[in-house]
Image (cartoon, rainbow, N blue to C red):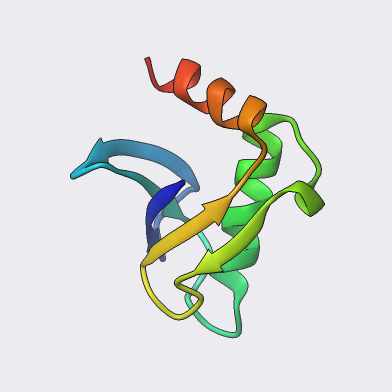
Length: 82
């Protein structure tokens, strides 16, 4: 899944899909991996799956991230976005 993370927001939430990427606002600061941890926690809660099922593939220090998640969770996310 391709994500654009926007750290430092007032609350963590799904913003929109733009340019083929899911844009998520993250309330955590982009320091020491806090925003990445918050992003994975938010996705875990939103998709009702354990954090261990989510993996940050690329973008650890970038706003553009690629996250691996199980197929059934990706389908659930697509349903939430409709």
